[in-house]
Length: 339
Image 1 (cartoon, rainbow, N blue to C red):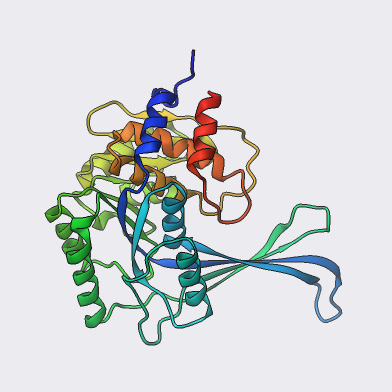
Image 2: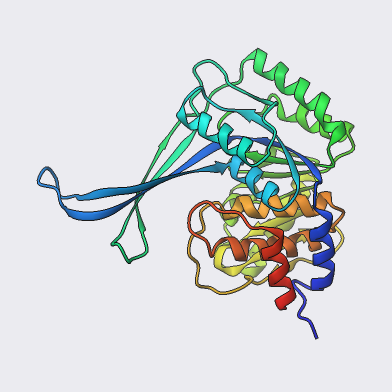
């Protein structure tokens, strides 16, 4: 007998995975560049008690909302990103990455003076050892939208939403989305008869009337105003309170090593245990993978539970990879078939 994932048969998840192919999804995103600089320690500096690293390589990868876009593309969906980048090296790297992977960039713009948010991670280790993160340096600050940018955003939504089957909002708090324009954005989504999935770091309570949200535990606690810690009953109270506050169909709370919890309008809360092994390599960007897989599965016609089950498998696979990573349909299909 095949083992179900969160109560969903693997065969159904395979059908849903196939249905994601080429589904157009508009992604409103704060686009971030993740920079990984790898080095090998050679000695301690005489200038200060710090390591001197011999630089080996630098990886430039889509991060933040750009990672959600990359994950949608890797899953076989057709993401259409709407957002902004700076006229700088990080912005150029993101545009080149999107173009290389066939992601359209026609709805991206470059405001004067805007700096692309960049997260630089320095990793060190011996030639035959796993590189460990030493420090992270963040650059790029939140910037207010200008009147011209707001008009560009409205026009992009007006022209593109009718062509899409789903919407993912990846709000990292860099200013693309704010209290003054979120209601208008959600009204446009509603007018196009689409369902929006929201992943918001600090503004989740702005998004009322959405299809679903995918916060981590800390974000859910903050939005619900309840400290959960490891109490299952407090988690259920916070999850259901948040779902009702947002008038959402579903809330999917990621719990790190404790898996996920789904709170849907038509069923009792469901706890999904972590998929795969607990030998985690890197959790960088795992939340973006969850948001991407969850929104893609909903757009392909899956129920919230089916979408959560698929997202759970995707997350279990992506944390086994180092750096900001994605998962492919073949990887997910292999994992499901192994069940």
